[in-house]
Amino acid sequence: MIGYINGTIQAISGKYAIVDVHGVGYRVTMPAKNLNSIAKIGSQVKLFTHYQTSPRDGSVELYGFTTPEELNFFELLTTVSGIGPKSAQAILASADLQTLQIGIIRGDGDYLHKVSGIGEKTAHRLVLELKNKIMTADIGAVADSDVGTDSDAIDALMTLGYSQYQARDVLKQVAKTAKTSEEKIKEALKILGSKK
Image (cartoon, rainbow, N blue to C red):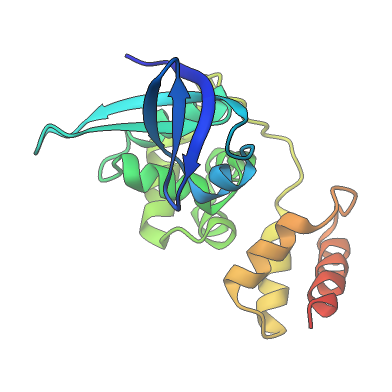
């Protein structure tokens, strides 16, 4: 119904942004990482949206994403049994889009669970139901990217006493030049050491 909105940010809260489009304020629910990345109040923004009506109470929710690829993947996630819009948005907030797609394409539920923090059963269900769909759909997936080393790096950092959340978070900050597990671990330890 509403493919995208283009307007001025009027307010940002923990779960949504209000975007003024020609005098109408649209409340757009977004993952925290997207809310943090969009511009400041008063600036222009373009958000790709998914319009959802609740069958229970008839309430309307507008879900927003900064790229069409995120929107497409969100809509694909909602086709999985037991995953509604709120769960799909939480999954997208847990890791970057490419990491999620590669975990599914590789058929590695354990990897997906480690790098995204989603539940083990949910991770395996995503692999089972979405692997073939992702491989045939045009949603911006990159199957040959070298992110398999993240899983090893997370295991190593957890062995060193860091939590899974800390390990995942610091790996997002590691330079793109770090390719091997060892390089990622070294970079991550430098970053974690500088925070003490």
